[in-house]
Image (tube, rainbow, N blue to C red; front, side, top):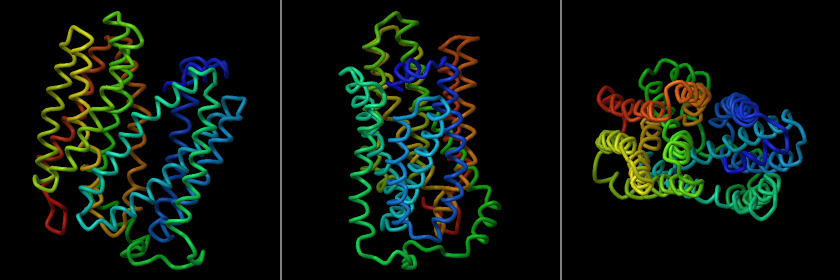
Length: 370
């Protein structure tokens, strides 16, 4: 997001063109590729998919940095998105399958480290651009880091294992792929929890973008204050993930989800009533804290519906990429027609979805985690 002006300037893109080539097209293409490979991850060795994904990610980022056309940018980002999704999905499946404490804490810790990355990444990108580099320099730096990570992962996860070694019991499927997919399609609880997890995209980049615009335009503050608001939300997400990691084993996950959803709705409403930049940043910090448990614990519930086949769960979840594509466009239309406050108010749908899911989807008897 912080490199958007550099991308638009160097590729001569309009705002709509930037959204299309940098987000919408790559997102849909990556989701299709990732869904297919996620299904196969329950058959192939997941450790190898982690390494393969990181390698392709590094190559794709180098390609994206050298692209001179919008189409090249979209292709590179699509490949990078798919590679990142495959690598992260395989790593997440390994983590969930091997976690003695269950998926709840594993997913919360995954979310915690992701939130730390969300704080660090914009700072690195912004620093690269402020030092006179374009977005290409930032992409090349990330590609170099991904190459290093690929080498480390290959050493730690694959090592000297034979390339065609069958998956271990912790990696292999509990049933044939076709049977698992057919069963997943017939699990309404799985679909409901995946939809709840997908709704969390509303309180991620979208809330940061809308809040920054509100502060910078509606309250006539400078860009620095808008940046501070974005950082406040990201720091709140880190704090919320850390707190959830501490309490999720003492309090049932549905209670954590329901309580955080109610508090999240209140803090988001409080943000809409603030009249000062400092109060807005404080409210966004609380929104970040209270929404942090939503995605990891909702995904943990989804994994619990088909525990032997996490790759199948991830593949089915790719269907809800439509939420990632449609939500920004819909909220943009609302903001243009009715104002930023109304658009931000629409984000209350997210904690409402989580709260409804908690009330309607009681833990099932065949092993859903409480």
